[in-house]
Image (cartoon, rainbow, N blue to C red; front, side):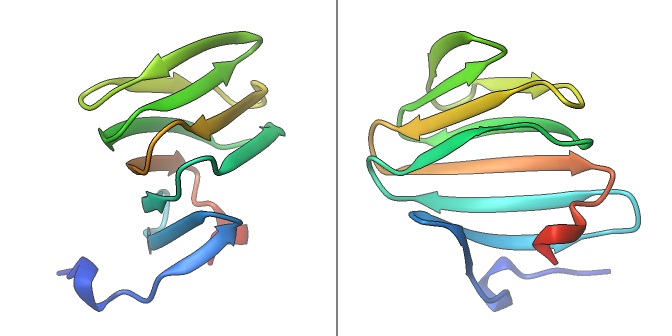
Length: 105
């Protein structure tokens, strides 16, 4: 399967988070353009997740510990671990979820 991100329609999953979503049998990938100040409220899910900051500064809280992530940094989020985030600047992020994030389809 060949994919061109430029041909994928953007979805605003939560306010300020504009994503291009790719789904396989066992994974979902999300390529986000995030508006400065946009917040992901604390939540958790069955999916394991890896988040990578591509551009910008992103404040991320994982299981009560907060850190600011910058380009080239990743965070691994286990199943059912509470997490939240806030874009301190406009950001580009990439998330990988396993299993597939069905509610993003």
